Image (cartoon, rainbow over all chains, first blue to last red; front, side, top):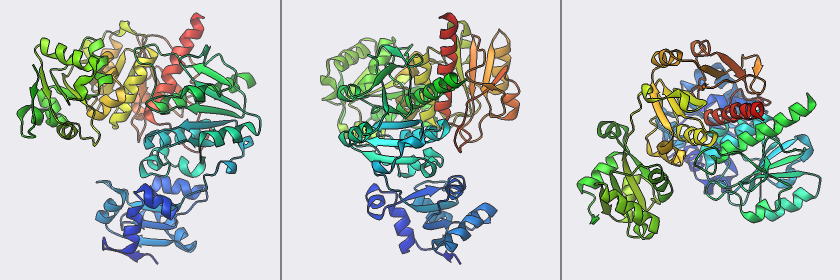
Length: 269
Length: 269
């Protein structure tokens, strides 16, 4: 049976709330996801929270009730609490009525089997958690295997990134690595590393892409460093018709991902 | 000569700070842009701020000094102030060293001459200011004429939207209209209204697009309402290979915009 918790000072409340901070997410190895939509997506992918918190209203939804029961049956903790306390935990004025705390998956690079998907997205020093979540969502949409985060990126398990992923944080692989370890791993097996560059001579629609293809996206402010570009097997250019010289990083990742998978569709068709 | 202002209670400081609120942006008809990059982009497009605020450090950059002088020469106000006060005005912990307050352009739909660009992006009830700014940035990159905001959208002149636009707020047209007024205006001249729908039978890569093409993007949560889809001349489907049934709105706008302009490139080539 779920416990009812009404005090901000409750240990579980304080623990869930602490997961808004990267430091505690890291030390606890946990992260938060909010809302029935994402929590149901996780459950459908075989992942249940270790702790689930909800309002009385939130528990009325049959699907929510089912997930709460499944969480308890699996040995997890379920607490019913107030909208006020849910709001404190999620940091939002209009909190979702359901909040789950999940175990972080292992993000070691060697957990990735590149043969399981034709495309992998690699992001270098991506600083905006929204861009990371949005790119995971795109990875799902194009059938990419997941997202490899190179160098110092924003935390893919932050509340903002999880929210922007719309559940893809539970269905796509996430790995973190520094650049040299990534290159070593990459070259251990066959691969194509593709970067975008204004200096490229190939248009992004005219180039040949080969699986397993690793699409490398640069930092929001600086783009890819020259020495990273130099390691790419292929550099392509996305046309920029206007005054600006770059796209939003998540947008560039999506335009490229769709172009790459479309080129394979045409080759097959 | 710029005045030096050190008091939070200064009238200009309070006025600039008030522009973080939509209510005051609307009543004053002004908006804020931060940082040398966007402010220089505005100047290059012939737009100077009515008020410019900067730190002593900010004014050291030759380009910043030039824009400050040009603002004053054009009858604008220039104030030198502290990093603390700039931070209060921009609402950021690490404020930009330069901040401009600009007159909002007229966003009446009849200011748009559709013959000036082959593609226009139309967003319905877009709620995230980051998505609006990012889509303006994409509009610039693909050579679209601008962004038409239908129904209740987030404010394109909010600090977040201006920041995400990377300056495109100054170079692309922005219009606001309700749906029925938009349809009346649209049908007054030749056009193609294109929407994306999971129910569409045309793949987005196989459809024929004709300028002036109006690409209609739906709200983040609900997508396009059925009655809006019904008004489209063409509905196309972006393939979704994974579990989710939609892309981030700014991502969908970009994937479609690049596909549409690429189809024209191939037709010419």
